[in-house]
Amino acid sequence: MRNLKYDTTMPHKSARELKKIRSLPAVIAMAGLMLLPASVLADAAVGDSVVSIGANLDTNERSAILDELNAPKDAQIIEVTNDEEHKYLGDVVPAGKIGHKAISSSLITYTEAGSGLDIDVSDKINYITESTYRNALITAGVTDADVVITAPNSVTGTAALTGIMKAYEQTSGAVISDEVKKVANEEMVVSQQLTEEMGEQETNDLINSIKVAMEKNMPANEEQLRTVINNVAQEYHITISDNQVESLVGLFTKMKNANINWDQVAQEAGKYSDVAKDLASKAKDYLSSPEGQQVLEQSKGIFAQIIDWIKNFFAGL
Image 1 (cartoon, rainbow, N blue to C red):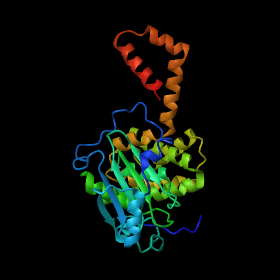
Image 2 (image 1 turned 45 degrees about the vertical axis):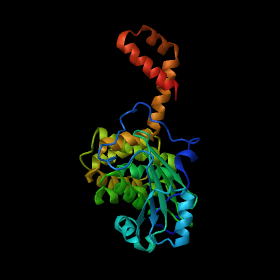
Image 3 (image 1 turned 90 degrees about the horizontal axis):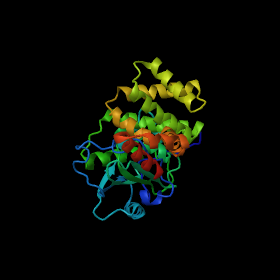
Image 4 (image 1 turned 30 degrees about the vertical axis):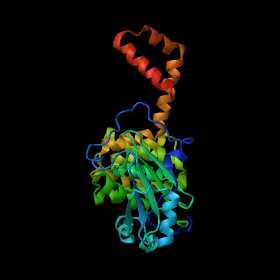
């Protein structure tokens, strides 16, 4: 692995605008199920923004980061310290690699319920990918927001997650336990290691599909969890080593024991898995086929109305 300097916090430009052309996979059959609990949006409103900024930035760096993020003048600013980074990353990243300064920063803008997470990472974040950030934030319960992550110089971005969760927690009314914060940070590190070894898409499919499988049938022990991981890997034709399996067993065992909302995590994870795209494609192809058209014509009553709704929905994808 490259000799990387681990960073401290996060952000960059404007997320949803920058990524409209390369938008994330749309969830199709889950529309309307992604609503956050009322308590989560108790204080934040759609369009509200909050900046998480590294506490060790000097005056010039701080000003430059706020300009780069195009942060609204009324955006709340929350500082993240190096001590907080060590608290949540200390169990999974050697202390020497975390460093002694908090410098990376982020901008979070709340979006409408069900819109999902849109992550934009500047090229100054040289290690952690957008999908890795997103999947870890889903585990932490962060949903429906545009997130931009950057830093004043080139860093890995491993500490950005701490700042995003702190900002989200302080402005949304949500409470993220230390246990969940730690497991989300570990997911980020483990996922990025897998991304380096097997590729981003494969890792993304693997992580998200394991989450969905666990929500459907929670493994009772490590052996059952190991079976789930191997079955998902086989389904996606992903070659996975014994060491990688054990790394995931360790991660998901901690996740299983943490107080996370598995229903919400699985729903959000399903939005970003190729399973959802495959189902959408197959359903659309079937409804466009002669056989599918015949079924539509023969259907009557409420069933026909439901089928029509599904047909129009998929036609718009």
